[in-house]
Image (tube, rainbow, N blue to C red; front, side, top):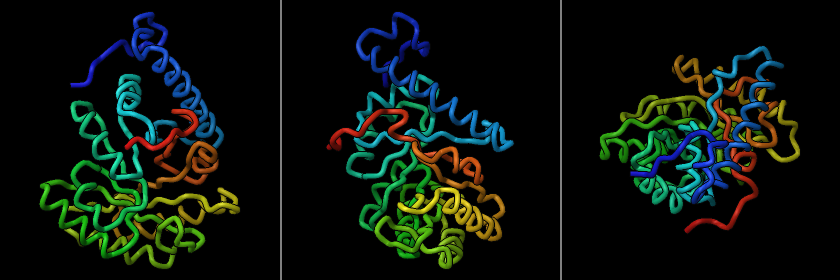
Length: 249
């Protein structure tokens, strides 16, 4: 089991081993939550509508433990070789794991063993592999259709015109649950324009499964715009954990 400690970052006990880092993370978390609150207020939304996902890539399992003690339940990773051992190290925690990176079909079996939600489903072949892996593991996995807003394949994703096809494949695959859509705002494109396009894709997906209302959009630099455009899930790394470090292998 992972160790427990006071959830109050101002408690002197929090400044033992790892206490300084917990104090730092608590400050970052408070700042991010304040940004979310203000963005929601400006958009006429309730902050309770937003799920905050801490993207902990390149950071150790200890940071996951500390953020979990501070109240976070949702964590994201984008590389299976880092995510799988990290999930195993934190198996005793109340955590929902989100896989947010591009996913190769050969990694589907491994990712299906720990990910509760996969944000990067963008082709029918991947859907089939994930469904087979989910059934073999006796699990039900939420899947989001990754949308390539500008059609550039470099970051993965299916162009808007192909979203319905992938969504229908997920909906038809036993072991998978169609959850909604995900996108990264393309470089050089105004985030508002990108996220409005994603919202239109979300409308189409909800036509296939009305409950598939997740809109995974917004990172540290564009969370305000994402919230304005209806995001339900934010994928936040740098603003919570600091500048990226070399990958943990």
